[in-house]
Image (tube, rainbow over all chains, first blue to last red; front, side, top):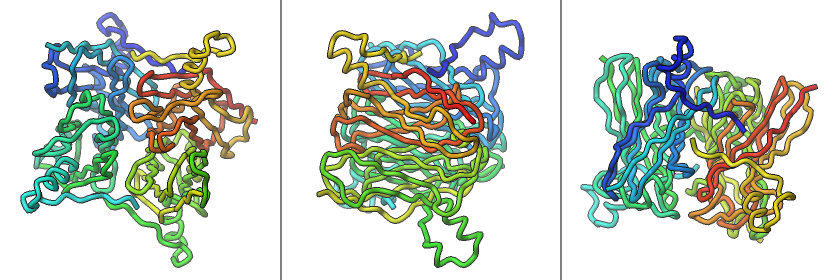
Length: 126
Length: 126
Length: 126
Length: 126
């Protein structure tokens, strides 16, 4: 099984290079904590929080998958042309609809440093 | 070659069912007309404008590809689970960066009614 | 709409560079002309017939989609790492099953030269 | 992180239903044990070995990813239309080229039962 790197809280990491390495490869999910049943809401996955990732032809974020528990919601294939080969925080947003609590996770893939995930985000339903 | 249906202005279409059919299958791109070189901006692709599309297991919007001229920027694979099988306007946003004028087009794919595109959107650079 | 280049019979093309350009970007489908209802059979899509395509980080075959009429059967995302960055004929095979006549087309995508298709291949059912 | 189910040798599983469940969701990689540097060879991923998987609109094998160590080589998006909604062993083959030892793994995804992997297959180079 390919390794899926888990996020480590970078405030607990000492070396600057390692903070950068972990942060820029990790997917961060932004979603409302509570939504209305059946009403569309937006979920954003951003690669990196404090640090940006290269978009070189041989080193870029090539894929983001969004899961609800074990269910794959979407796989996005990305290219360095999207951001004109400029270092940045790759960001994709989706409009979702739900009728019950979701537990969202994302897996981001870097062509040099493999697959990365982060803690699940819970979206409650009122 | 698989047919790629082109958008027809639905205000010129008489039958309600046909308006609905064309509108709900067409990708609509929302993007700024003018951006700053090297500064990230958001582009949104929405399937359907005035009408929503089903998200049934055998009938849903399964893929959206975003192109700049002939260059593929991203392919997004979608599922009916994203919207809990509810009729809706499927929507995906991307953060892009550019250094020169872009000409964006999207191709959306419905599992029952094939591939659809719309007029290109120009993003100028100041 | 992004252009989808159609194949031109290269025996009718004079310039060697143009023959190469057309051939190496075109998807060639290999499939049985007649299959048994409900019995799996193999379909192969090969990019290029007489000429190979580069697999450089900034220039490679990144996607192949297989259609039956207007129905998308599969989209394959490819990388230059698959062939260790060596010029080659990218090849993907699928096991299909059908109960009625198919009309198969493929669209291949090169990161530098866009989308390419070829004449449809008919698979009859006995 | 979404769970990635690991294969269990079904000869050690007692219940028939569980054997079936594990087997039909697991990707089996077929590849030569030894290849020549720079010479294309074929690798086949088959979902299920002794048992077939449904291809219903709400329950099918929707994605197969092939990795070499942590490097993603290809992601294949599949549809139940590929096999005309018939139970079968989904199968995809790729032409690969390598210059050094590969360690291949596949992750298959079922729309109802999530992500599954199997033991890595080593391809040596002579």
